[in-house]
Length: 217
Image (cartoon, rainbow, N blue to C red; front, side, top):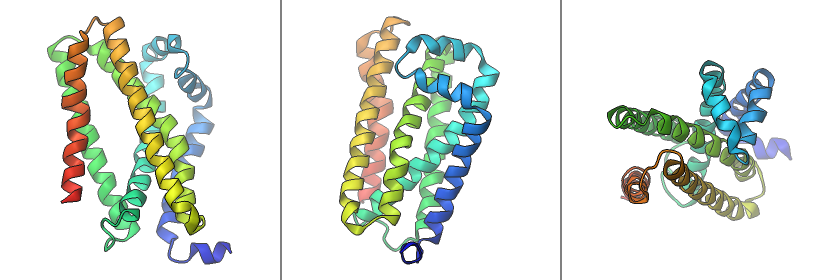
């Protein structure tokens, strides 16, 4: 049964093995900080403590970012090909393309946020934004990874359910992240709510809309 499922899925197996390797590394070398990091999702009092330990947090953040970018790329590839896009691409070829696009988009957004934070003296808000982006996405990916594995190696019957569940997970945690950041920026940094609305439209919704439109075309 396993041999039958693995036929033609060698690329997916290698990618998932690589992801699990990074999961093992972060669990082995950063287990205490990882537990503290994940607890911050429900206990925001722990956030400032971690941001003050910048160097220690940076090691955890690097491994977490690699896991996030790899897991999201695998799910995006599965979702695209499930809906009939890029079927002439191999899994590995499309995975590498999506991975490169996500890295470029993330780098551009980080650079833009850093510039805006410097321009308006909001470095503290930028640190919270980066922290919550990584935290929410890591929790999201802990749910997306088994979804992607089920899609790739599970029964055909479960493919529609796995993709639908994955899309719901993305939408729910994306909304949670936006709402939490809006609350923090308003409560801690006194950023007016209408500025948050402009931020959501310009830097959250518009890039996703442009990328979706480009893929559909």
